[in-house]
Amino acid sequence: LGTFNVLEAVRHFAPEAALLYASTNKVYGGMEQVGIVRRGKRYAYADYDRGIPETTPLDFHSPYGCSKGAGDQYTIDYARIYGLRSVALRQSCIYGRRQFGVEDQGWVAHFVIAAVLNRPITIYGDGRQVRDLLHVSDLIDAYERAIANIDDIAGTAVNLGGGPENTLAVWSEFGPLLSDLKGEAVDVQFGDWRPGDQRVFVADIREAMARLDWQPKVSPEAGIRDLYAWVAENPSLFD
Image (cartoon, rainbow, N blue to C red; front, side, top):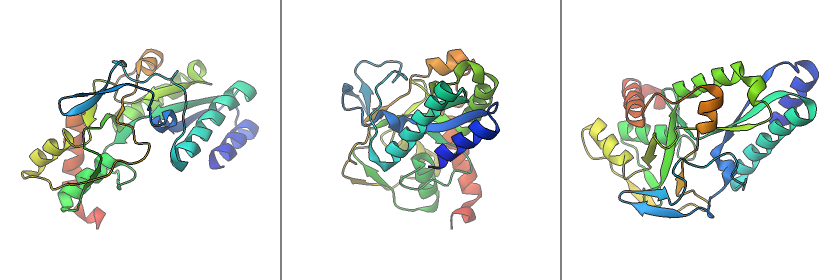
């Protein structure tokens, strides 16, 4: 409802404004129809070497996916019907400094915070799930370019993620990196798979690269090291 109200406000009072909707890869659902293979310590797509494109059918899972998906489609349709300069930006895993991640949202920061403060970490599944990560500085760069190119991308959906060059297995690869940063092993426990959880999600970001003249610059290792340093310097923020 909030997104609908914003769209209506822009339509009536600021139709010339650029409107960016922060959508999510969750609009693609559990991706059960996509072939998954295991390669060493991680899962991978059997066929989608460049990731999941924007043309993939939508399949909303969970109240979160339904809510974000509705806003995604309203944003696109308001451009088509009313001529708004609006675009849906389907974001992968965003992370970086000042992200106060919790178990259900912001998992990269959540794991880092837990490791620094010696809090428990639970991995749902086997930890070989793979996600593409996008540092917040690269996201901001993409947003600025989206505003500058809004007339070209209005009425469309654009994936914003790290793409296949910036992926990380949720624990089989992230765990050793955290242990290296901490200087000791990070304890973890495992729970059952979550219903509808994607074994792999990697965004095909070629559309964003071409239309926004953009690409991610911060690697997962560099971004996580920076995030870890910030959390370690500011533990009182997480009391």
